[in-house]
Length: 411
Image (cartoon, rainbow, N blue to C red; front, side, top):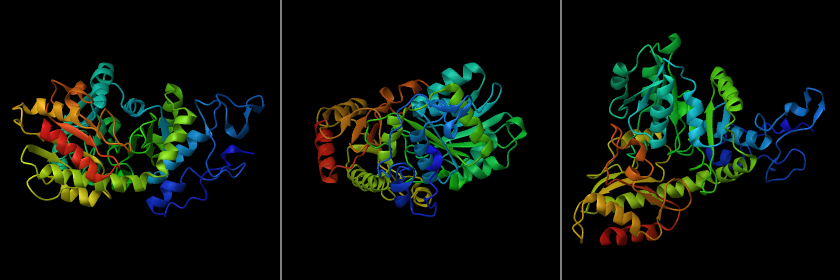
């Protein structure tokens, strides 16, 4: 039987995301009817004759049925036609950056994951691709009017951003980019990193993005047990180039990794609802404390810590997600600096685990300046040294608040 018979033809793209998350890419096995899709753990395939591969399958770097299920699933959730999976979010970043050639440039939002900045500065720039960093959250059209040049090949942003949780108007960026002739005399390609929101939170392609991508390690996988990345586009030319690069560079995920992300996606919608509910409770708790200087959460609309782009977040996002950032005030019972209090808080929690990464069912806490964003230290993108980033999990909100309260009180 042709293993490509399971092409998702039974999936209706008009279904709500909650339904798509359960069924897209997880159609029953075409051979046995198994409800849990099989893991096709192979490196190569028997051919029916010389240069006549069965169903088109030749070698697992190029094609794997389990990987194809994952690619199909994420494409469906993002409303795109092509999904392309990679070994990690960083591998996805590296391949997408290959769309820009030496002599061309990338306009990047001024708050991004430290590894993204590291790649553009220490890998892309030495090979001749320049990156320019622009605040896209404070008037995207005005910022891009002066940032875009005839050499601009890509416009690259995160929203919400990592770790300051700025919210960027994707539609406004797409409109600004659409009227510009960049590298090769063409409109720049708009790339949106949707890791913090997930497709359960927002759908950038529907707002004008050309490519959306994820570190699927995070909310898509959801259980902190896999490393994976996925890009989605509906642009046929871009998709063909990314497929070529996926095979040529070879940074592809193994079938077990793809299966783990597929399993995680099936509960994505309900998980993100709980992440959002808990994060809202945590953000409100932090905002009510006199010894917390700054709170950033896109779902916090009112009060002195109301998010400056809360109205945009409400329009653009289905759910605000589980990421919260805050800065404690200096002082506390030990008279510490804000930085030292931040470290003490992160080392004093019991439910929140001191660890990098995000988007899992468990709650995590970290100091980005010396952990996930050490790469941007002493740069224009450096983050506040006392900033704490929370990935709020799906535990009891009451327990999470109690854990933070005791840690902050003791810091």
